[in-house]
Structures are given as C-alpha cells and as structure tokens.
Image 1 (tube, rainbow, N blue to C red):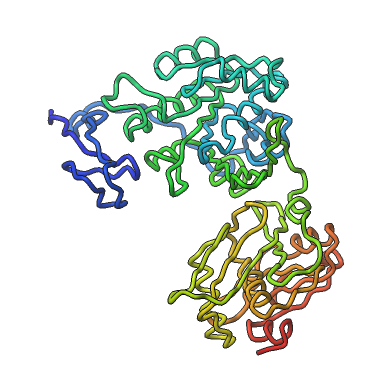
Image 2: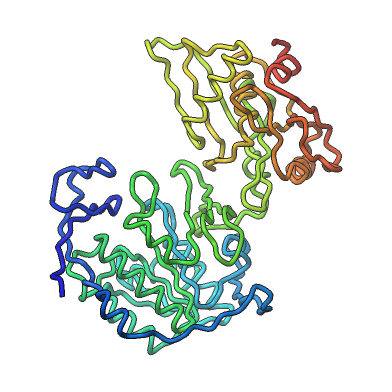
Length: 455
C-alpha cells in the first residue's frame, strides 16, 4: 500500500500544495499554508473491485413521498428563511462577521424551539456555560429548557448527543471543534472538514437536526474549505452593518426551501426582534424628496422589499475621482457610469461618486440598475424624483432596459406603502399592479429625456 503523502493546505482558501511556501498561489494570502497529514490513503483499485457492495434500491420520479415534517420555532422570520421550519435530520451552517449576533440569534432560536416542546442541546466551544447563561438572562431566556455544554472534543460531543438524542443540536462553532484522529490544529482545513462531515453524518444517521456556527473570512466567505457548504443542507449568512440596528439572515442554499430568502431582524437591548414589514422599516426615515434618493422595488427570495438607494456626486480634487459603494457591487457601478456616458452622453469625469443602500441591506439583483442610474442622475442634476415613485429595471450595455421578473409583486408592495407611480422597463408583465401608475421606458435615452428633460 502506498505511503500517505503529507500535504500543505492553505487555511484561507483550502488549496493544497506539494511544499510549503510563504504565499498561497491560489488566493494570494501570506502565511496561511500549514502542513497537514492526509485523512486516509483510501482503498486501492484491487481492493475496491474484490469487495462488492450491496445493491441500492431505485425508484422513478413518479414515486410519491410525504414532504419532510417541520418544527417551527415561533420566530416567523427565522422559520421563513429555513423554508417553513426546521427539518429533522438536516444540517444547517450559519455564518457571519464576528459580533454580528450569530450566537444571540441561535440562542433565541434554541429557547423558542425548547418552549415549543423540542429537546435542544447547545454546545459552545468558544464560551463557558456561565457566559451562555449570562446572555440567556440578559435576553430573558433563563426559563427555557435548553441544555448547555462547553466542549471542543468532537468525540465527547458526539457521545453525549448519541446518549441524549435531542431534536436539535447547536454547535458554536465548527472552527473550534477538533477530532483526535486528525493530526492538525483546531480551525485548520482538515479539522473543519472532518468535523463538519462527522456532525452531518450524525444528523442523517440519528435523525437529529444540527446547526453549526461558522466563522467568516475578511472577504465574507465562511472560513475553511468550500466543501463544508456542500456537505450541509442549508447555508445561512447573518449580515448587517455595525452602525445599523438591522440584521439580515439570508439563505444562500436550502435543500428544503427557496434559496436567497431573507429574514429581517432589529438589534435591541433585549436581543434580536423580528421585523414583519422590512420595507416600511427601511423607508421609515424618508421625509421630503431629496436629490440623489431613489426607492428601488426589489425581490429578496420570494419577498418584495423596498429600499432607498442614495447617491452623492461632487467635484473631485483628485486626479482619479473616487468611487465608493456600500451595499452594492462596485464593478456594476462602474458599468452603469460607462453606459450613462456612452449611451446617454452624460459624463461623470472629474466627479466623485458615492453610492449607499440605506438600512445596511446588501443588494445583488440586476433589477436595481435603473434605480441606481436614476439616483446618480438625480444627484448630478440636483433634481429630486417624485416622492411617491419607485424604480426598477435591468440596464444592458447597449442602453436598452430589460424587463425583470415579478414586476406585479413589486408594484403591489409599493402600493401597500403608499406609492402611486413607478418607472419600469417596457415589456414587464405588470398585471393589475395594485393600482400603481407605470411609466414604461424602452431604453436609457428615453428614460433620461422623460424624467430629467435631457437626452
């Protein structure tokens, strides 16, 4: 049998190298490569062919099965992101920046599940049980029947879970767990991969729902190998700006429900409070119409959400004008500026451009292109858009406006919040639109000429 070969793994991206070096060639990070022993040598071809496995059962696509049963926590926003509740034998990974509120959210969820009759075990590898109790008392959760543990040895944790057989087990965090069968430090790629595999296998084998807390890198990705996200059933990201009280729980993968669903929470002194109507909260500080402010009617998962896009354009004293973006893609902003100059003849040369999505939410939908262009033009021309108008539409490189999906749902959400007009691409399936008056635009020059009187 071939001797296992020692490998060198980057802790930032998981890339493997034949020898150690100071800089990872895959991600460019420095001092992240460490020596790790392989998990196993694996069976050879002869052994695999000699020992036959059992025959698996097959079925066709017409087989009817009952949908998986779900346990609801009573926290509507949390259950919404999970797809309607917690599925037994599922593995969920929750990631987020340090101090954003991951442990607070999961402790509140654990207490809610326990009050609903579920047996919940919360194991912390980062805090002592006394610290978890102090947080529970501060949140008013001390009376819930959540069982606590503080341990990092995964063998001991799995033995305890086997004996207790809970309905839900929360592990905080997977980066602190270690297996004595893996010769690597806790938090390394091998340890994180092996720990996640063991916990996911336990969830499937014993029918226990497992939630794992994951640390994130400075790029916002969950630390460790990306294979961890493939192992689990659901991946949730807890997002938000420290300067804002809003927190967004976003589903980026869900085998039991829609992906890209969001739940909105507000950080208060008593913990995280769910927000039933995010659009009203994101637009609560709007007063009189102001240049550079545009309301975008977006879709997050299955939920229509209205947010305010703010732009500021000012003369630059720099040889290369500044482009600052918060809550949107900086590369897409550069594209919008180029299209405005090439297709509408509006130049932003010599001007600093600042773009902000109010409320701390991050938008990745291409349907925000037209709203961003409207905010930029409004700031440049110092002309405020109507206070009762929402904007949405995708902008192509040719200057054409492309229709977007779920236009009717966007308009109905706008009508609920008192908006009476909208600017949208021609070709959108409007339907009734909730009674909102729609201005259909075919391309960018038509939009500029109609709204800003130029073209």
